[in-house]
Image (cartoon, rainbow over all chains, first blue to last red; front, side, top):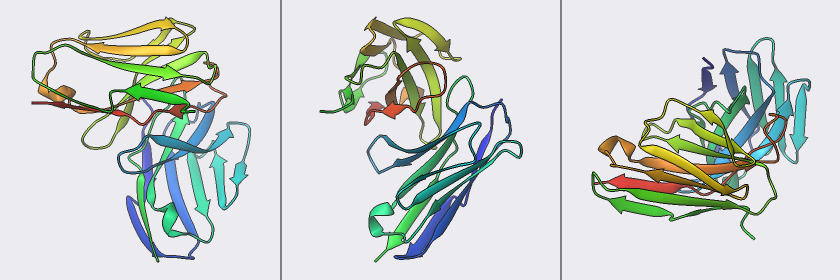
Length: 109
Length: 114
């Protein structure tokens, strides 16, 4: 059974800082890994998807890496902004997406 | 132009009632999903349909019955609601079931059982 752990559980930083969010998973037999953000009372917004054969993906200020063999992924956020405040969820995909509990991020002006 | 839409957004009802949640996607995707997010914020897969056929059925009480009238719709019917059913239910879709495509989520339906 896939278990997903996200560290830290919560993070508060001043605007402009670069951040790293960590995700680890126990079963490396995955098709891909998807990072989402969830705003309060809202659904999930897909940020990045890394295929199992890839090492990283970039979208704007976001960069996600994947080390499938060691069961790790990181999400790097450059030059954080208050609008980045949300919960970030990591979800490796086996036969279904398996979610961690997320990292709750607060970026203060 | 909402991609994955769920109705209702909020549902408050009493124990023992039967209720349905509807989901529609206009992305032309073949595969749809239902997830449950409990009070501890864990998101777990419940069901998945591909072209109207059930392909994933997790250990979910049989009071929960998904129905897919066509590949753009996946509804969730819940019989004899219990207190433990209180949660946020999310619908999602993906282009196919291969596992190579991203999943797109609706805004969720917050179900509260009194």
